[in-house]
Image 1: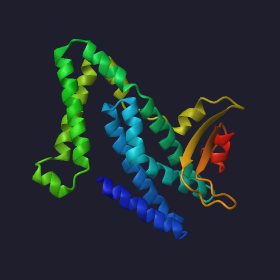
Image 2: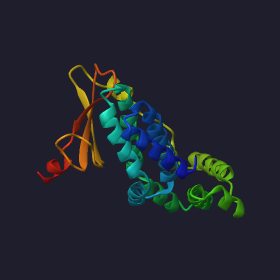
Image 3: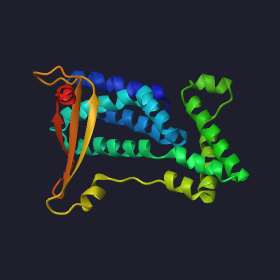
Length: 239
């Protein structure tokens, strides 16, 4: 999907939320963050750690903050929505922490010309895909650029690189950890805690704070990740 579609979903969801139509807003927020998550999942693979952080701030952060703001209020009506916010938090953190720079350096240090050439072609293809994604359909036609072809070529190169480099295969192999996976590892009396900082104004009585913290708690008895909202984020950070 084109990035503008995610923006449209997000804006319409905002409107429904302002009107108190939370059931209509929910799938639109989920659609918007789903698109943006696919975007970072695809584009992060060829970015350094610093580039990932910059990319999130420039293209993703507002969408995720907006979604978390909605979830913090919607949770009491629909506790199941906490699973989406929790998955988004832990998976995005995992993608940011992946050491892509180390993999690049190891491939370049291998002195394997075929492997190095494949890596640079893969990186150039991914870069081209990311730039093409932000063009309109008309602009793509004028420049004779096709997203499907670029995506197919990038995937082909990725498979070849995974066969030739264990480092590459390890960091880019698919795999998703769910909250249930974490729950299964807990012993009776134990709990897993994940805290998410959300930088956006929240309409909570008696506060105009622009920062909230959401604590996701999982125990062996949890039906869904439980959410505790800490609304006074600015005060917490000052102390």
